Image (cartoon, rainbow, N blue to C red; front, side, top):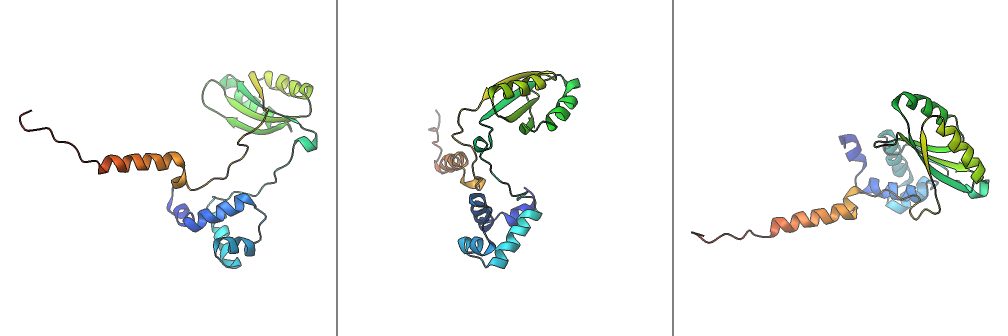
Length: 180
């Protein structure tokens, strides 16, 4: 992590991020009240987080089902290298594609798509199939649909590793008896 980002991601920076991830529409006065800053100081800290690229934007979370798009699916696409540029251009033009990720492994891309019906999804899959071999999974539910990002120092696996390392350092080594 570069120095500029380390400066804005102190404890207060992480508190600001937590509050904004919970509600990105908070006023600067409410945001400041939650983290112990004045409204102008909160606005300045948020501006620095934006300038550093930590905050890249503010987005609307839409209820796809209420918009007539009840089917969300992940489509993995295995495609030969020579077809990847065409596939990227094709999916960039599909309104049904919510996300497209170029990935490692046997698949070239993973798409997240929204469809109004199984027939609609089938048409999307057929279109993608002209560029590679699709494998589709319909999303039934999302137990973790979106998670707030917290300071990596607080992540449970990192805490467990640090605790294990600290324990190993504190345990004195047993010495073997002389002549053994």
